Structure formats: structure tokens, C-alpha cells
Image (tube, helix red, strand yellow):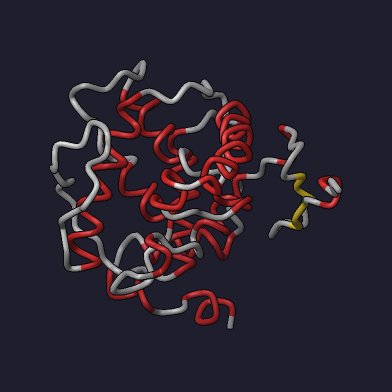
Length: 224
């Protein structure tokens, strides 16, 4: 029996998101930022919590020489958004996603949501190879710095074994969310920009100026 009409979730902003039949108006950047800032990569097996949003934020500053996008800004924006679907259906580990029938079924649901997220914010649904290239560079960096083992048993397509030249540090959930939204505002069209509240602006100002504040819960500190 198909009960797909019940396949919906309530998002952080209160939106009812239809997983099987999503529409453009269901895509909300704060929902994406909020969810992916709490969703850990590598199924949580890193040295410290390392969420999808932080992965996308860091990778958005890396533009390969072989980039096929129209310009560096488009590439950065596409990378920032390339895992947006996970904000609605969660992440799936690469082995499960690419080597099992469960992964094949997951991708059937994932792609329409991901395409919709791109289109919602003025991007083409086509994902050029340079996005996956940076994704793999980040994968090597993350594995080496966060898991203590840089070797992969499986070699991914286009993988030359190189890692991105970045340093990954532990960040609080709120810092990841606010930095993601700030980066989104730098790259998106003016009409789509997220409107920060006064207190969010205060927190973002402080976060951007001190790594010491990474692990301090500024939300309670400022609001209190």
C-alpha cells in the first residue's frame, strides 16, 4: 500500500514539506541552514561534530582551475547549495548511497529535491563535474583531519588523491548556521537574501571576530 501522501515533515520554520511532491515555495534557506548545521558527516564518526553546513561553507571558497561554471561566484553558490536536499531527507553515507539498492531508491527522492533547491535560488539544476571535484577534495581533507586515516578502499571517479588546503576546526551549531546564512547572502540574488534579526547580527559580528568564541553558546550569553 502506497501511503506517500503521509510522507512529509515539519521543518524548523513550521513548513510542511512534502518529501515526494515538493514545490518551490516549500524550500526555505533557514530550514536548510538550521538542519544541515546539526547534521554530521561521516555518520557522526569524526573526532568532533562536523556538520554538512560547515562542509558546504568551507568548500564554497574552493574553485578548481578546471571549473565548468559560468564564473567563480556561481561555482561557490552551487557548492554551498549542493547538499541542500539533505536538510529535508537527511544524509546517507556514501557506501550505502552508491553501492546498495537502498541508495538507488534514496537518490530517486534526493534528486528532485536537490534540483528544486537549485532552481529556487536562481541556479541551474545541472551540476557540473567541478562540484564533485571539490566535494572529493574536501572528502580527503575531512578524512585525514577528522578520522586519522586518509586512505580510501574505494577510488571515486575523478579522484586523484589530493586534499583541499584548508584547516577544519570545531564550531558550535549556531556559528555554523549563521556563517552558512551569511555566505548565502554573499552569493544569492538580493531578493533571496536571508534577513538576520538584531541578535543574530550581534552573534555573527562576534563569531567572525574571534575563534575563542567558537564553543561558547552566544545565544544564551547575548539573549540573557
